[in-house]
Image 1 (cartoon, rainbow, N blue to C red):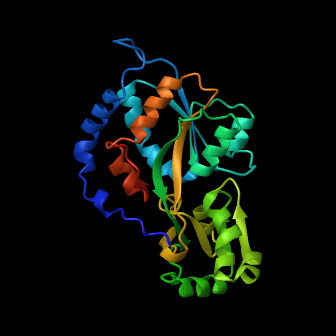
Image 2: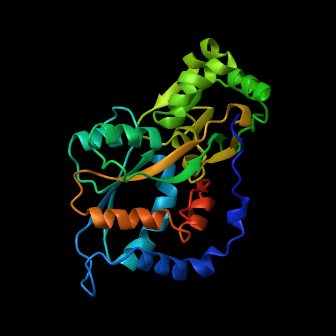
Length: 276
């Protein structure tokens, strides 16, 4: 049984007042990239999957300001063969210095020679949740039995093509004993946020990482999976073997894993795995 994630301790931090100063100190602690007073040079190319996107987008400007580096970003799923998935992007040799995705997928990229062995750093723990279109009735998912009833009653369900969706289609429905009834009315979403599909009314119920649902306008987040069937995914960062800026890549990863980044990460629905 997976224990529920607790985020409340981070919400009490006074981010607006403290973060800029702490961030600057954290980046200073990461060390200069050019040595001495030499200015930082060269863009950093990042590929990040949806689970960490909201936190990353909030953190990137402070890193750029404090480091003097420009960060260019490509977004895609942790796994799968969609054209914009991170494995597909790397297979096409798109520029990458840092990749951020689900830990099992990152380790697979290490095995494939796409990510430097030993460069992996765990950043966050991420839970799976459900959403409905804004203003729609909020179904009960507070227990395993309630979740089963809700899934059986839903006319249509959207789920992601990445980590949460893989769990849904290969494990969760089987564990609930309702695969035959529910899978035919479930739709796997490629290259789009599940919440966006739900907001359009193209699905009555949407399942994805909580951090990917919360930023979407036009939906109501109704809660996480019950603890008994929850699957927590660790999202991690690594240095691409083709990186032209490996030292800068490591500096960015250290910042994302620093205490300065933790309050911003927590407010996006993730549990930071901050370095000591």
